[in-house]
Length: 154
Picture 1 (cartoon, rainbow, N blue to C red):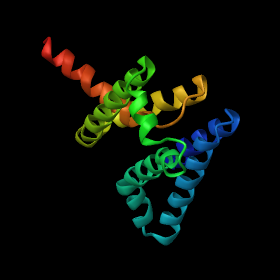
Picture 2 (cartoon, rainbow, N blue to C red; picture 1 turned 180 degrees about the horizontal axis):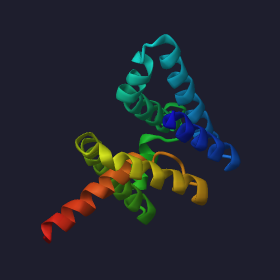
Picture 3 (tube, rainbow, N blue to C red; picture 1 turned 60 degrees about the vertical axis):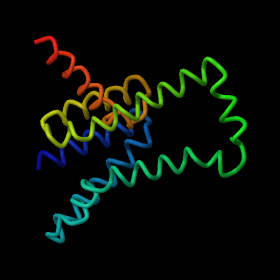
């Protein structure tokens, strides 16, 4: 029952905070939870937990590639981006974000107790700072890096 309360709270915060992404996500997960309870088959909810992240990353990556597909971004504009300070910083930031997400997934798999804190931090960023809920992977990566640094200095 507590999972319904937590999901309802996220849904309400999404609505009150005018964050349609969080609102839709909470509705989808609530529906999947209800369907898994009614059918006594948690297959869909388990599938979403196991494969939803990959599916989301695929959709996000596809959306980012659309400007290349429609000609807004060309090979020339890509090459030119390496010649400007903001382009170099963007490439570096993308590299660091990808590395962070890459180490974040194993951290969440090996230490599932960190997931609630990542969710709370991400939701706080979404609700109070108008962020976007793509943070848990990168936050897990940052957590990994901070913990590795702390472990190094022990």
